Amino acid sequence: MAWTHRHLLGIAELSRDDILHVLDGAERWFDMERGDATHARVLHGRTIVNVFFESSTRTRTSFEVAGKRLGADVVNIALQTSSVTKGETLLDTVRNLEALRADALVLRHAASGAPHFVASATRTSIVNAGDGAHEHPTQALLDAFTMRRSKGRIDGLVVTICGDVLHSRVARSNALLLGALGAEVRLCGPRTLMPRHPEALGPTVKAFEKIEQALDGADVVMMLRIQAERLAGATIASTREYARTFGLNARVLAHAKPDAIVMHPGPINRGVEIDPRVADGEQSVILDQVEAGVAVRMAVLECVITAADAERARA
Ligand code: NCD
Image 1 (cartoon, rainbow, N blue to C red):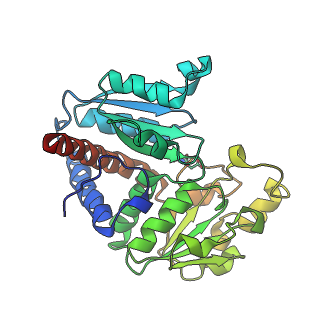
Image 2: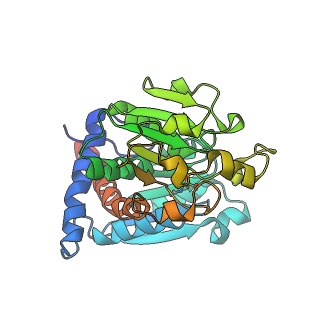
């Protein structure tokens, strides 16, 4: 089935076939990259603008590298240096970028729904690079890519996601995607950092209060950072207490399957949600996730820009 979406706003808007289309497309780019192939030119002459109104290291760089490896020109805009600080609205910023004939805008914003709002008002393709506590679709796609490469499948896997689930767009997008591909999703965290209705994230989602129980028989352990920037008021007693009850160390990890992989979207807070020895240990695929991110974003950029071309050709 062909990909027909001009924008990538969230996993919620994708079908199972859409997800597999991106993962299979990424597989091709991943092998080409590893094979040291010369840069592809499928987006030669195209312009991609990274519009980041929240901090980012991996996601922004990954989109930039992905765009450049496809031959596109990539421009970066950060909140601190944009005219938003002079009072310009997000929509006006986007309309100006559209007037510059950008082909795609990769948008990260603190407000949930910002990319959806912008997408309804522009002809330019919008790719959501994280909107508030809502969705982070390319992160979930690169996580699925990493799981599939490591475990050979997604269907039937037991994936435990632990930490600040309530404020995590990564957890939301992952729960939606993994549910669509048939994995069992277990969510675990302090009561104050858990969603009130976890089952709303999918039929295969279960909530746990103790990390040891959540990890029992898990194939994949995904740890999350406490989203301090989204916390309104105190929600944990102390980071030391948090590390003791919800941190992943070797003792706790032993509850998962012996060949379980350890994931984290980054940035990691060493000694808080994850022990450095586990983060750097044999079961960790944290840097594999980063490598996968480039191939997945190459596939996503190719998909949305090709779909926009097809839509224009039909109009
Ligand atoms: C995540 C994000 O920004 O949502 N990071 C990322 O994109 N790799 C997770 C986080 O900030 O904790």
